[in-house]
Length: 190
Image (cartoon, rainbow, N blue to C red; front, top):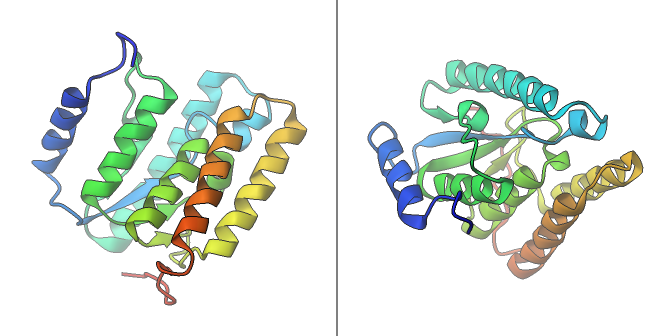
């Protein structure tokens, strides 16, 4: 960690503040691209990428709140200028571990190294992984989508090292888990 990154104690304090409003394992968590995704690989300006992705994520989270009637955690509005991508990843994976009942993956999640890492966290912790319609994301489907996402990133010519690394970690995670933690077969519509 650099001097600009938060300490583990600071991250714990942020998690404790969130716990004041959200009971453990009670929330839906929204995962999708923020600083990356389709917009990044279309070579848009970084501010345009984040702003457009954040608008889409907030709209998705609002619809999910209305649909579920319970807490929905969206990373869209959370921005700390001194944090780097890895720090956001560590923080949001900790949020998922502590607060998520399930994680909803927006369309295009496979183009985001953060979302791929969040999917690996869900796999490891056996937290349900749902697509935008509420259907379980099976292991094979996850890997197929990640590999296609990586192909898109490679063809774009934009630096894709973090996505490549995240897909590799997911492949190892799914290999270690094997068939022990199959996601539920039914859609999660409530």
